[in-house]
Image 1 (cartoon, rainbow, N blue to C red):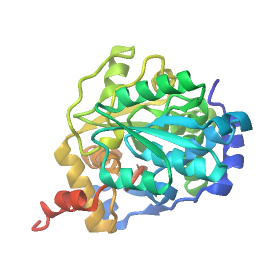
Image 2 (tube, one colour):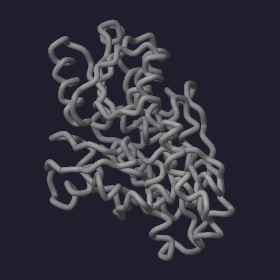
Image 3 (cartoon, rainbow, N blue to C red):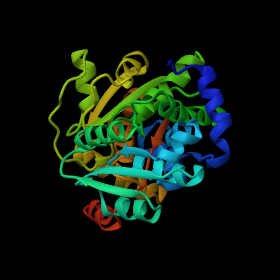
Length: 323
């Protein structure tokens, strides 16, 4: 299935009743600091604290009643699981979520509050995805991939539709990348509508799985290191549709260090009074790193989530308190 303009438009019309239209705010101070016209798409304001509800609703709402009655299974480092659990609650569908062992406590607690059946896997996101998909096949349940599903991607694309409605003339959009669902959706929207907006993919240096696949021209296993951006960590499954889509829609690729991610999170706290998770810091860090080449341009930074433990966030912020 292609991620067409028609599919995105239909998805938006179908799921918008359950979504917040999140703010797109101009940052006076960050614009002054960088010389770029910085617009922050505050998707952490979405229900469940990230963009993931969009794709989850898009996918689950198109299932038939028999599929909903059988229940659905998914895997996630947290945010996708929260989105699916909330979508399950909205649509009356039982949800089982496989989580990697390093998932933050705040996300685990939130999943439990949404009455999801949680199974913790002693491994990374890719292993959680593999085990979830195996159980779904065994039980005959629908598996909701965090990214490898056209309906999920179409749901994420509705975020781009909002950006275009809020700011029609955008020079570039900076997007943090994990499995590629968000950037595939946003990039597809701009490409399908023939809009000349640069799509910038942003990765932590410690977790660049899809980037390495793009560089090699095929999906490969990539060894990753721990990162503040736990929501974007993990490999890309073989055959993922996000890989060929990303090959077509991603214009620029940037990587940022753990130090740059933490500095971006601090900048957002200091100048915008915003608490965001590491994955949101990745996109902001990439723009701060590349500011010179975007001087005077209108650039949107997608702040994709806020689900970080408060103590962990404080540890990141307090190291800069004397600066």
